[in-house]
Length: 352
Image (cartoon, rainbow, N blue to C red):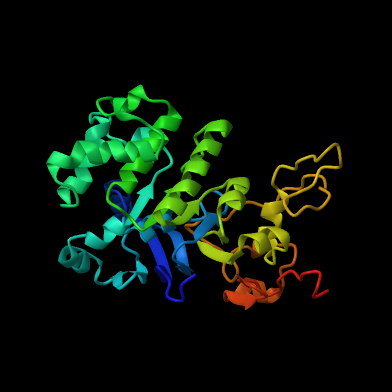
């Protein structure tokens, strides 16, 4: 990996505010105390994406994975902090002006592949236009060459020329996923941000699309950020994993190390909740190769992002929580080869 990261996320926070409606404002004039609802989607997230790697981002629903992906892709300007891609930076204060000056040229190098291609592909456009419109508009391909260019992209993703004149509804889910990948590749990106890109597919089709991602990474030298709730998929595809909980990264490190010896209590609980497998008639084992115990879900409920807990966000559900966890936000510090945001991280076998 290169020393200079391809993408750097620095102390990024993202807030979504729901303003008061007219009825609530009227009620306030009559003495009520309604307030705007603020969703704390991301809370001071910092991480790097190295050139050529596959960074998996995992966590429960609502932890901020998709929001982080959209910020990385430049689809959302961060409320605080900054995103640096190569020599370009998109900050909370200069996002609009910088994008106008650059003409969004740097965003072409970061493309996002969404979870549901049925909703992300325009149903009124043929595949030819869905894929070829952007590179022509940005001057990367001449209109006279668009058809041949799109045919080549379709072949890369396992489709043929007969798809050009058809519409999205005429394809299966797996084929639509391939069209979405081809559309992202059309503007020659360096980084693909995949948001649950195989979640809606059958298992057999998932395997085909995951193999396609691996092939494209090798042939085109791509870098991936792969967002998923499926730990098995992330383990198969990723070189590093970042674990998120309620808007924060709680652990990040090499995939093998995260699955072998998780150090954050939440990461451990997340891995223990994975479905177990049985090998050659032996006792079922979990994600770390240990004999699986009876399934035990994480106690308690995920706190609301509108009113996250103080200190460590996981402390209300953590069996190792101490008074310091309730008051002090843990820093993401190096523990072995991983970084962990925990005051009392789990110890590995070598340390015990």
